Length: 234
Image 1: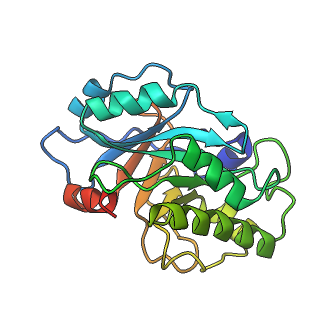
Image 2: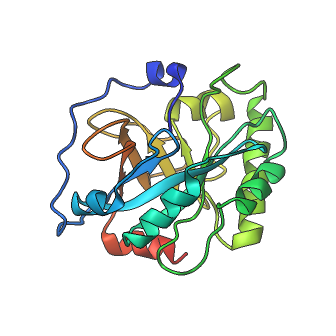
């Protein structure tokens, strides 16, 4: 994911690159998230550098499909990485259900195979308009519920929610409505995760830098490699 300029100003300054573990050490497994901004990724090299998982941009709104998604997804699969797709939300363009169905139809699905992560909803700063897409906090919560419930009805799992604590507080009124169902993926470019949105006592994923030793944004799973596999099993 590529956060907007507004988002970057609200996040803490990026810290120095975190050294990647050796390929044998997979406590708090490292990962990356990528899109067409990283058109050529050597997934075998990334795996050798200690990467265990990758989230790949699939869709945006209801009209955009990422041109690199299929190549990235196939490459990650062939390298033996745990992988999943993500959707960049535009709550001002159509309903949550409409965008969830678009995501599901273009790479965002999930299967209980142990290598497919639940799809992720990237809900964050509007890159081309008002921060909260013109929605009130209650309307934003309803939109996210619409997306989440539609995804769950189709797949049997709830989507991961990617966001920042600042955006969540600003645009959902710091809703705690999703903490018992949706894994959290927090973006914070600092030496620690910091405060989390209401309801969540921990984050499942942490995006800690927008660049580093591997392509794309740099991520970490909060747990063991087996825990990551368990998430992929639903």
